[in-house]
Image (cartoon, rainbow over all chains, first blue to last red; front, side):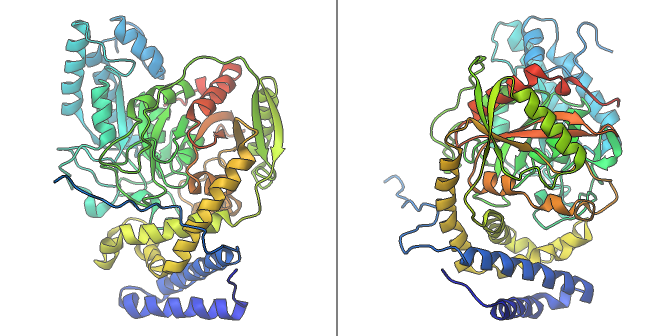
Length: 72
Length: 465
């Protein structure tokens, strides 16, 4: 189980938002940036909910990789 | 007016029977629905492109073949439409988005090819929410063709994102339509428009040639007048496709036999608790009808973050699928203002959280299947609210409706579900009940929905358009 304190979760959310502002801030108005900030908070909340569930080392992702070999 | 039987609102099965018997002619039928699409379609913003020339070519061919005794099956000569995220060679495929409104892809999607092989007649590319709602829209006015209006009350919304597919079937502009669902996009318009809509098991229908929003969540499926029609259409479009490696390798055959055994239905504890009063009342009445033909018991899912899981997968995959679109700033050309900035937040989903969601999904699939094992299907209100006003942000009208455990589980675990109408509100808006099955159990949920439709008549009611 991986879980963060509320403060750490908020800080992560702020860092992620700053990354967006750095990359795309020039395209977005102040109001739009505020909406993006709220959406990043929700993404961080979702991540935190996932991190509260315990997973074992051998719990694999649902996607299965299959090697490809073309015809000769 | 056509001579002979009136095809308006006629189920596909009946149309097929009359076409085979020579009582309806494919060309005359295509003309009938093309006229409705052209004349009535704009009233509901339901249509993007009417494929008149293609439809008449396919109808002439169908008529020739049937007259020559080369009958292909129940869809032969039957008109249909597809959501405009499904590619059709030589016809624009816009994904409902202004930046792509005139784009023509040089590809027929596998579903289009399969329906052509079944002899069906493609009459229209149908309206949809831009990019299947993948940019985070909050209002009906999120398509360059205008807000999709509900045939039961044009002042209300069709639901989305297969909006035109729902409206066109409900208004009798087309006998059946193909829609897509990543999370709610077949069931929501089926609910709001009072039609029968089937979300198949993930991988049942090839997505080759369909817009990708989320590779591990996207499904294509039919919207029809009846559950039985959904089975007929699914049989035509289902099956393995070498060009879509996610397709289930076994062919699928519709089992249309009527079973007389009692069904075993589960009701997810609390699934209707925060529903609108009339939605809840109609659902409870539906349960009373179902208890005549089924054992109904409450069921509970293990406490897991289903919505966080499915939302994280959707956000991460959509961010990747539309990476170039967003980087190029094209989202700013979309119709809904919130779709301009909506995609930026998804660019910061961490890889470890996406992988965590995929790892949790493995466990969720097992846990949910175990919980569903005693049942043929789980039933729940399809949507917790009836259609919302056309000019209002739907999350403001129905904040509770954003909690959707059935949708998160069903789409996250790739489970099939069918929505059929279960009543009306006092204002005359339809409400729906969904039957969600275990993976690969389309035949069971279709049988349960058919049985429900055999003891109710909601699906036989149509809006005055």
